[in-house]
Length: 381
Image 1: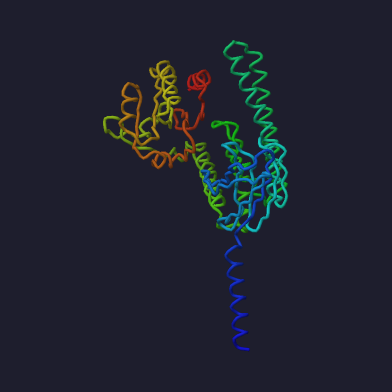
Image 2: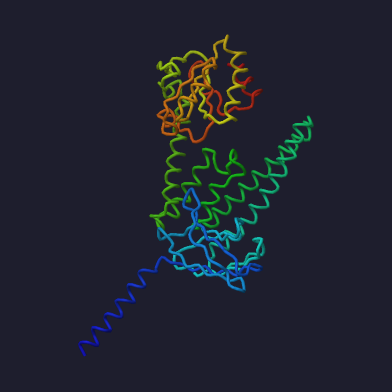
């Protein structure tokens, strides 16, 4: 009797251990039309990079099954790929048993067993359609600008603006309608292109905060939630900085003291009493062109007092020195890149970033990269 009891207890223990070991696993069963005996990849988004999870071959009927250990005890973004092409995007949570069918081009995607993945699919369809329209309008706008068709170009700009607003409104509706969905993370970080994110204005901080507050209680260990927390802090800091700059007459702007190309310290506060531009930039070719454009502004207005304080956000000081040795304004770099104290002081989230100050040290403009608009803004000072 005692031996039987021990055997039963041992069997139960094994079952419990097995259960504990698989509690964060999920199964993804794929039926892929037209891909028999072909190699299929399963990848996962690891916050800011995509990593390979597994590679398997379909059977003679185009079926393949992946079993994965879902990390962080929270939903994660997974992708089914064939020969470098995306077939399906999924949000996989621990315990999910997902079944999907799709053709070899990624069309006709059907999903069962994951409401999150179904919502993700539906949102992606709308995003794909909007992106195609945006890209088409952008190509037309470039052609009009090159041909000098100003009236048509202005209409295209308005249409692009309407599309942007429409897509942002749709994203906000989705966030509000599905407050506990991981699709909201994808919405927050969506971009039309590298210079046009959907949620980047100071007022958008409320959406980052809302999504973070909704998801954090359930998924506290998720790296996505931790990234959202950092974004919320960044938005709050940006708002605080904006408030400080808007009341600069009383509080003054954050000072910067960094060495120039000759190793001499240069203080931003030394420019108080004259209009000046504070520029954060990198050594990319596009931003070197920005310096060339600023030379035109500087030549027009330096005799009347305009100065430029240019902070290179980079780590290669040798290359920086070669680029700026011919520039006639104050150029500084500490070689710390995005970890620079100056970057932290002004909470710079992307480069180039530009602040235009008047003689009193009050903000007079920000990120004015159009040459004519910048010239007009400086002329007013």
